[in-house]
Length: 182
Image (cartoon, rainbow, N blue to C red):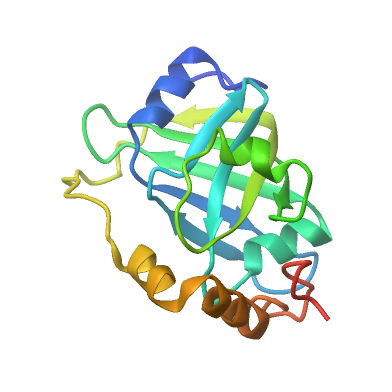
């Protein structure tokens, strides 16, 4: 096990760059804990103390709602190939939506695609790693194309309609996307 640190160092940055999958965990003060898998080459280390990923339209809006309520977030990467390792980034996060001034600058640094609803930006306060000896080996075969196809078929207007219907409130009734919250 490595020593806890407060920055994403070069070793952590290199490990992150090799991973095709990461997990995001958030929780409201009261209510359902959320744990979501993410992929699609959507994660970037912006600075040693700040990371971001592209957040795509989905049937729920838990991460964004929880971040609006309390900002707490943990991101976890697991090595499924090569040397075992689990890396966790703890911090405070926020959603940056298309109408926010910071959005275009993030779009230039984080890969995006159809259906993008926000960037999740995390100010990192703690970085830890652990052995990962119990994590199984898996072979990466590629990205799925269903999300891109779904968003392209719906078009920008259709995605916005879907967000209005599905992304205004979380499971626990917390406000989700600012652009569609009543």
